[in-house]
Amino acid sequence: MLRFLISVFLLAASALHAQESGLVTLETRQDSQGWEAVGRLDIRGKGFCTAALIRERLILTAAHCLYDNDGSLIAPDRFEFLAGLRDGRSQATRNVARAIAHPEYNFGGGASDAAEVAMDIAVLELDQPIRTTRIRPFLIAQRPITGDAVGVVSYGRGRADTPSLQEVCNVLGRQTGVIVMTCDVEYGSSGSPVFMVQDGETRIASVVSAMAQVNGQKVSLGTSLAGPLNALLAHFATLGPARPGGTQRLINSTERNETGAKFVRP
Image (cartoon, rainbow, N blue to C red; front, side, top):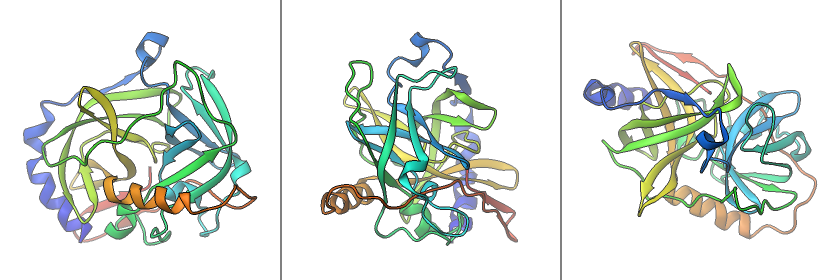
């Protein structure tokens, strides 16, 4: 079903590309201003994802970043959040006390499973809050609709030490909780925040879950945050104090099919 939806959404892609911007490396402090709450989420011995601060002690990323290829959770002490990492230096560095995936997320369905992508979000509780004037947690936007302009800040393969900004990419469509976008992502970009400007403020509208190619056209897939994030935070609120427990690794799962679609975890 997801493959079919992407094929349909791509029919509108050519009309949108002219309005898009390319990836820009945020090389200087001035370039990075306002994006310091986006950071690299290191997973010791496994790789990294991208995450963003949404509360003083909570970061938001993709749920599949919490799992090893065999489906086991990676222990929280394997994670480290490097807020505003640029050229090897972060604005703040924190360890992770616990990591909680959406309660309806089922790891293993594959990136071509719409139900999995739709719930592919997780929150990680930091061992210490981040309280600095430079790093301000992001608010959550209303869900985007087809034709909306969005942007993404991410780390990725070949650009792991400095974040990149794509200021303008486009929403091709949304269905079954999955947002299909033209945003340029790469391995390591899983969990990257997708932004919209609402009420004069930059807010997180989605989280990157997967990238796909259909007939040579590259797209990215994200979660529609509104309902899933509320459910995840409500679930998190019912939990007691953080205890030793599990969480995470990068997943590279690829599927090919007769439509020409290729789905990959970034």
